[in-house]
Image (cartoon, rainbow, N blue to C red; front, side, top):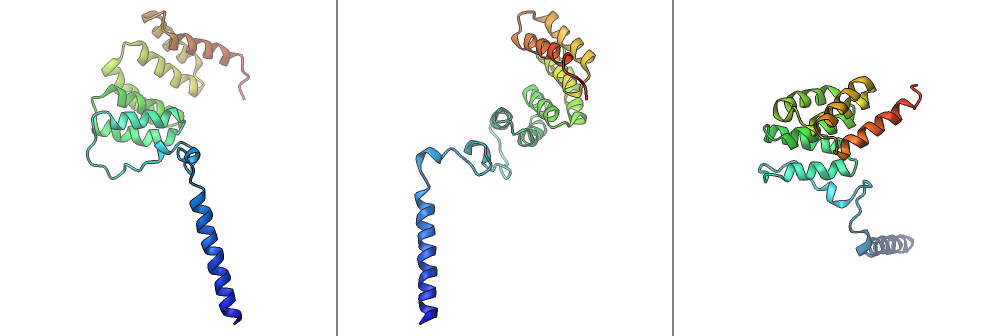
Length: 173
């Protein structure tokens, strides 16, 4: 008798747990994932063999914007392997590498980019920001000034120069 009521209790608790889980799915939580980032960023595309032209770049940008730099690094690494002549793939790979401190990878990417888009404000701003992250302020300033010379109205360059100016006032530890 005791075993039967114990089993009924367990079964009742189990069914109540399932009902609770089913009731948790509301439309306001559908965009959330268990990892804290949005549900759009957790789709598994690792087994995909064919990529639309911009699928990897779009996914990499989304991960980067969500500050999932490790994920964006992995996606852009795949993108440069699939599309080695695409400067957007190399820019994303370089920026993601910088954000996770993989400066060896970003240096390799900037070498590739110098051949593709070398004398542009985009290139100089990105490589300058890389050196800013490394704490190499004189190098960063040189690159930002090259970008400024090419396009004095570029807002990114202005923000980078302002950021660098503010970095000089912060104590080094």
